[in-house]
Length: 411
Image (cartoon, rainbow, N blue to C red; front, side):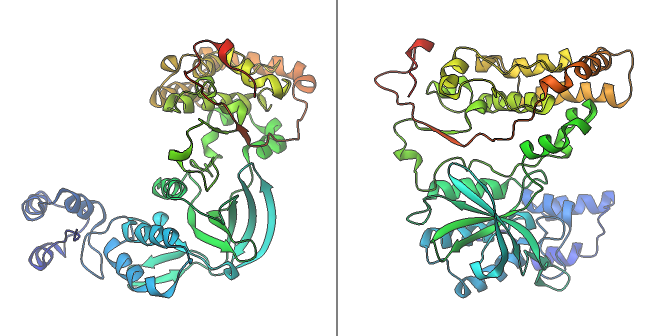
């Protein structure tokens, strides 16, 4: 299907309009541009100086970029049809610079060092010598940003086959065009191991590392506003690269055990409510500095979570905040708060602290928590250095789903 474009006649009538339209200009545009998307793009971003079509983002023109990428298809290949096709489609659909991905030859990286290992992948840090591409729309050409620090994520089992399912998950990472999600620059392949690797924006370490190094300098205001510091670096990549969803008939569950909702452990589908449960566990970790269930035998943890066990410690959390965390942990997914409700609740508490509303309940509870935690500081915050490995849980559903918690057997 051909892309809808403005005609030369329409362009001629509007090309000199500024971003701030008069009522007369606004009325004319409504008459001239009938396509809703084109009209929105024009009003938001204006016309590209090169092709005179509405931009798709600030300083980004899809028409110019897609033409450049299409002409360049013949100059590269991953030697894997699925990967080539995936990258090509992503390049043609990209609406802004954060959605651009490319095939990057492995020799474009230097100073490659091991960073961390998980159950399904290993991460390295490296210097990308050329850096990511950006479009100079005034000059009508691509430019490179120079040496860039990146993370190379090797997906275990990706050398034999990298499936459409995992590429779709990568696409989800690309299309979440959000400054709080680590950007994916593209895909590469280690020629020695034949393993595909995701080329990602490199951040300053994991949440666990940050808490281990900085917990005592975090006051409650910073804990309430922790999204100022945290980025999402994985978006749905928690499964082996060569496992297809359709093949996963045994209900194999992938994830880090303490953060998995009890209904998922019992074989139910993963939902947004399951995400809310995981958020509650992370919120507890930020509040206390402790790994959840750090004092529980891991061999018994699955069953105990399904039986209602939740993290606990002597570290005092303001009660209003703890109430929110408890709601996120509810065994019944339908009783957990929605994401927008969580945002409002936490923002209200943060606002009261930020503006020093000394008569508010949360302000008084923060003072009480600080006093209690001075006493328990040494005993309750012993540092736990070992990280949980990513765990593969083989929960096989036989004949029926679990009717009671007792039906769940440890593997």
